[in-house]
Image 1 (cartoon, helix red, strand yellow):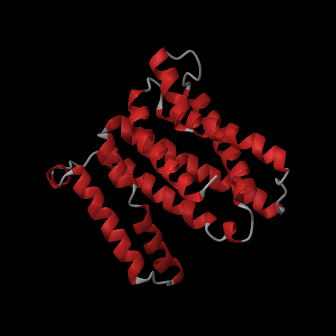
Image 2 (cartoon, rainbow, N blue to C red):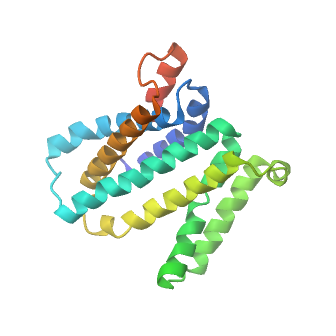
Amino acid sequence: MNPKLSLVLGIIFISFSPIFVKLADASPVVCAFYRIVFAWLCLLPYCLYKGNLKMERKDIILAPVSGLVFASDVAVWNVSIKMISATVSTLLANLAPVWVGLLSYLLFKKKSGWLFWLGTAIAIAGMVILVGIANVLQLRFNLGIVLAVAASMLYATYIYITKDVLKRISTLPFMFYSMLGSLVYLLIVSNILGDELLHFNLKTGAALPVWV
C-alpha cells in the first residue's frame, strides 16, 4: 500500500477511535482488547504468507513487553474517554511527544532539536484551537484528566522502547509479537475484572470492529 495512503487511513481510524469507545457499551479494557485483536487478525495472514516472523530471542522478548505498555496506554486512555469528554481526553493523550523529548533529555542528556519542539508546539496549539481555548481554560482537575495524561506517558514510553529496535529489524514481525502480547495481556486483565467479552448489543457489536 502507498505509504501516504496508509498514513491518511491511519489518521482517520485513530481519529474515530474515541467516538466508538464512547458508543460502545463495553468496558474500556474490552474496547482496547478488540481494537488490538482485530488489527492483529488483519496482520496475521500477511505475516504467515510472507513467513517473516523470525527475530532474535531478545527482540521476541522485548516485543511483548512493548505490547504490554501499548495495551496499558490504550486501556487507560479508554477509561479516560469514558470519564470525560473524548475531545479533551484525546488532546491530553497526544502530549506523548513532549514526554519523549523530556525523557531523552533527563535520561540520556540528549537534546531534541529546535525543529522538534517547534513542531510539538504547533501540534499542541493546533489541538487547543480544535478543542477551543475556552474549553481548555475550563478544564477541571479530575481522575479522567489524570488518566489521559498517564496514557500519554505510557505511549511515550512505548515510543522510547521501540524506536531503537525498529531501526534494526522489520516492523511487521515486531508488531506481530507486540500486538500478540497486548491482546493476551488485555484478555487476562478483562477476565480478572470480570468484564463481558461476548454477547454485546447491536450498537456495541457494530462499533468494536471499526477500530482496525
